[in-house]
Length: 456
Ligand SMILES: [Zn+2]
Image (tube, rainbow, N blue to C red; front, side, top):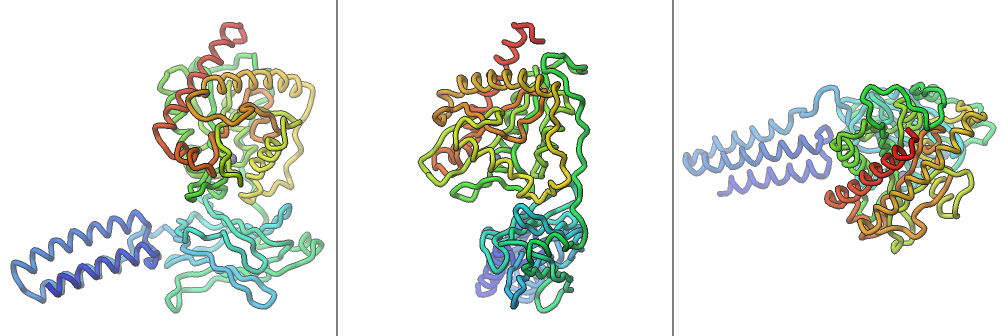
């Protein structure tokens, strides 16, 4: 019995270690799997101990358990970032990135302004940071975000109190219980010094999809399927988590689940060719979302988001269409917030040319705006009674993601993650099914009306 208790304690201890993240190279899935193996072995050893009463056998089983746990369990290729620690050393603020037993070399470290940030690009890693990581400030650092930036590239974006320079950076090999570490020291500089300083390299440019030339939205385009083309855009993703709710649920995850449900319902109707700007947890720059939409010659673009606000009693769905002048202050503030996505993800916007404007785009955009407004009104009608609506449900503002000149586009804010009832809805699969269903109905009647009018 004593030995059995010891085995149980050992298994319990390992579970605790795995939960606390002490087993640095273990993913949550792997640790669960190992707990199952440990549980099975523990049950098996119980039987053996009872039947044979051979103490040594039980002890060897116990040793076997330890051997199972001491083996590296992640694929060799996986680098685990288990923490990003902040410290202050004199004038320098130090970031230490814990990179487990495998380690990895940063591909790029650089600074950006407006607002001031430090971007650290790593080869693709698995982030297993503590739940509150990135939310506290220290020295020159006010917080940080992390996630996938593009295929094969993970990114940490560090917000700073002002202009900083990378004083030095170096890697440390495993030692004294720590795995591989990457150390970056930041120092405060003047704005002039900032503009002269460089990091390890320059920002990577995001490969862009080539968009087709602008056409008016009435003009039919070449289509293989003959179906109407709808592009569903799940907001944020990867290194940009969007807003978050009371329980810590991230906008990027909630909107992806909803977008997948909507895409699946539209596809199963058999009436639409559906494309998604993302179908996994990855970052897509705003301009790229517009380019993807135009590349597919979309007939309709629906961007899915969820909001958050200090006033916790505010709730309900709202829908936005593009306008240079906002319908109200809240809509303007929301657009400004959603337009920050590229800034949050550390995209260098310096090289981006200003919006292309010519007469053709203006003409197309005016026509497009009318169709966008009509679709938005249909959505409000059909959502009424299905989910709570924010007052003045349809609003206007300058969202960058709605700027495809020839594709009717709307942005849906499903609800507020900061409101208890809305958060419950946003994380409920049956609510997702119902609200996605009402959107499908709106898409149907929108195209039905346009067909009846001879717009196609
Ligand atoms: Zn959003």
